[in-house]
Image 1: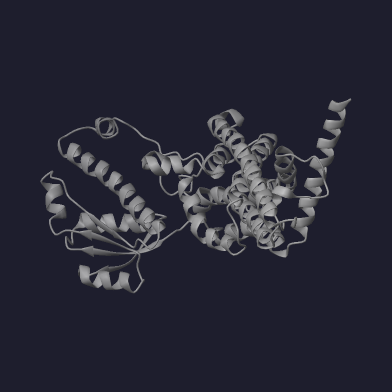
Image 2 (image 1 turned 135 degrees about the vertical axis):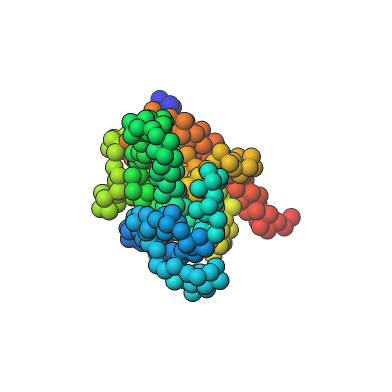
Length: 408
């Protein structure tokens, strides 16, 4: 009988805490702004910004000190690529540098004076490429165009050499293509920047908006000398676990809807790859949102002022994006940053989402990431309970200290 009463009390407290948390959320316009305006509009905004994810015809300048047939042919073929367009031929490097400083070109290709001579002598000839590094897309386009043409030129030069040696066309084909290759980029054939980046940003929006919204509410209540550790006061028999789970259920309920919108509807609106099974993505969303809930609850316990959230927003968002491995491979991370990245759900969630939605894998393809998020969830749940316990203990001591002594 006692066990039934305890279970009944537990669920009554749990439901009361969850509904009370929802009332707090919907009574704070700042939290609503972060959850629903930022959470729903940011994914659309980023997709609109990067909608034209393919940069074509990057303007470049050519400085041809060789003035030879081979260098002119090379420049024409670079101009014919999708990636680059030769805007002008400059007399010297100074003229080309001025054009780059004026932002009229984003790259320079330089042919030295001995370019054709070295090729004729079967020596190594060099070509220099200079790029505007204000965007890595300029660097990528210039390098890809030059490398593609270089491979074709190498085959052509080899073929001409063998042809001059009396080889037949069949023999030349066998010698120049003894290791045939085929370029195949199955998950991003056009090297689109939005496919490369936006998938990661979508998951980052879920984590960051949840953390900032929860921290904003926590900071507001602590400024008002209130605390989640003792809320709601009208509920009796509440323990650490049901406070954490009750609060978590409120955020989880809201963010399951937001995450489904971000992970499935937004990519469909903008025609991004959607190769994953819907139910697998739904399971991934549940695991990721649960992880983010306890992650946010744990770290929001350190927020004492409402405005602290906005400082964290500027400081942490670029770091979290970098730690996903999007802009730099995780295998090249120093050990400190590799271990530091394990603090954030997006480190595992972004990889799992890309493996499933972009590459078309199932839950087993993201197995390691799911295990990582599960371990994070367990650790952060324990830490969130500990944070509530400590804060509750400190509040009790503070209240006892503030009680005036009874005169004898």
